[in-house]
Image 1 (tube, rainbow, N blue to C red):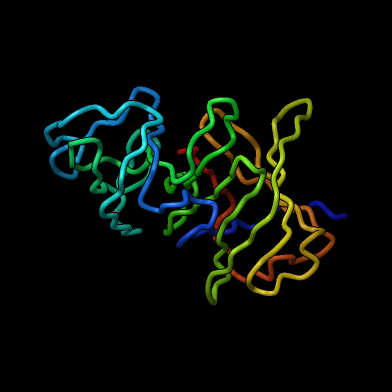
Image 2 (image 1 turned 180 degrees about the vertical axis):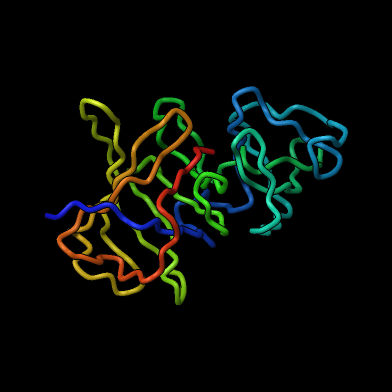
Length: 217
């Protein structure tokens, strides 16, 4: 099989079956907890501190791709949530739709660092505890969902996440022979390459840049 560097794929997850069963339930991933605030914005008055791994109910989320904030290398929006008897706003760069697993660092939701990736739209990747993954790919003429299984491998230099593509909703051919490779970093995953026996396995005609870095939420 041929291993080739790729032009950046732009993932935009509109909805995912690998997300929590109730899409309104999300989980706090900030190690020191997440501050609930009266209004959107880091300078707004704090209501309470939500402990890490706590579930919260997402009431309203507005994703505006060109009006996102960047806080500690996380890109996201302020969303209205409820936690216990409290209601307020939190920064969703520290919210995951997949419940974190303390015994497996890789499980969870990843979102792109827009400053490093240079992409206009946020990108999302989901890795679940059943070794399944899901992402949505920008095909220039629309979006398509890719699904499959994932595993980790370690070489002399890096820990890799190997995503084996087993399905798509846009007629991707020979899906069982396509692998998408990510490299683990301290904060997330960097997009590395596609392994395929086809020159253009995704049939993508758009160039989105040369790098895509995914921060683990």
